[in-house]
Length: 583
Image (cartoon, rainbow, N blue to C red; front, side):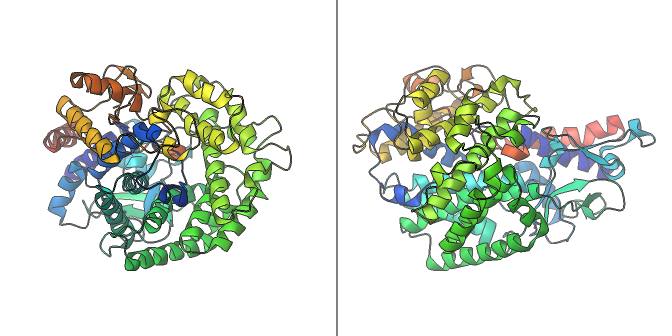
């Protein structure tokens, strides 16, 4: 009884932590050209002030919740449950290997089918996981998927590395601070012997199910509670680390800007880790299947491998991977009218169209970076003659309301997935008739205050004159960011609603999933109301983009929270409710 109560407690807390809030937007993927960033250190155009402020705000928010580790809780059992309640990002579930360093996740769309199980109305949650076979429900994310929280921890890690490295280039006054943050995050996840992830995805997207399948247990918390899992090799499993592209962007920026915290020894150690992971990707059956897939799995497998090849210095290998993708799987992805047939048949077609476009854009940028002579942007699908631009143009005309939000993504978030793609296509192909700029403006989305505006250049918008040095120093942007964040903390979590422009570089106030008010990213608290004009200008920096979790559903985005309150609620739910329900 007590073991089941504690299992209920940990399950409830991890689900609540994952589903409760998404205070910042998570782009499906991004490769930020490190040469572009390094060439503009401390001299970014003044019209990027709002976007820079949002980068600082997102970096600061993530910094308050890192570092992250793929390890199971490596502390005495008495402290493990408390640490998990307080939000330390060690996972509570050990992979079937018994190695706490093995990455693990559960397949997101797998749900228990107890229709043929006796006494199915009286099964406890633990019994369901052991007894009922699991079936696939495309597009419906099982919230239990967040219990082994490696996948969302890695997503948050990748954003933290990217935004901290970007922030380090905005001002010499803060360069060491933000670069140091990124380096610490890299060391914790990849390099430190006590917390580093093993370079493989052997246990990614595993399936729960009946006895007889491979077993794993909450041995780091309760040795007596067992879960039964089976390894189900799938090309989808390799998408768990698709955000390696963001990590690589950050590492390349650290190299290019000669960040003092990023030493030669650290670089060599990171390269060694990546080489081992590349070796696994090139030999594992699921990874090889992903690389040959003709849907978004193939797109993201190519992007991930290209990024890894680039960071280890194998640009020829990266070029080979990119050419193989654009000469292979890509050929059948886009129809003559610009639609993507394989993504259009999914249960959330608007999301999957945009998700694959984001992956194709990233893959194209990586190939262009590895091989500057490549004409990849004009490469068309062999079957139809359509390009990435055609795919985006078609998707701009699709009604996003036909997608059914799955409990984590509001319609506003689903709609917002297209904005980074529109900006990328506009900055790459040009916008001679102004249709992309018009689309962004008519959406009401404050795109010039979103982080992607920093690297999606040239793109019209923002305050100031593009091409001139910033009139507001980056140091001032940092100060405004932290001041606004402090004001928001004093008033409670949330984002300011309303209209206006962030001409002074006020920070974005991340929206929460609950509360009143309305920002560009859907429901939010008007926590900045007491900040007067500053809060009003911060409204335009309310971050929006692809919902956290992307293809694999929603994950846990960090949020300031009261540890004491969580502990009290958790103990009440974990110990009281199971007794009442006879779990």
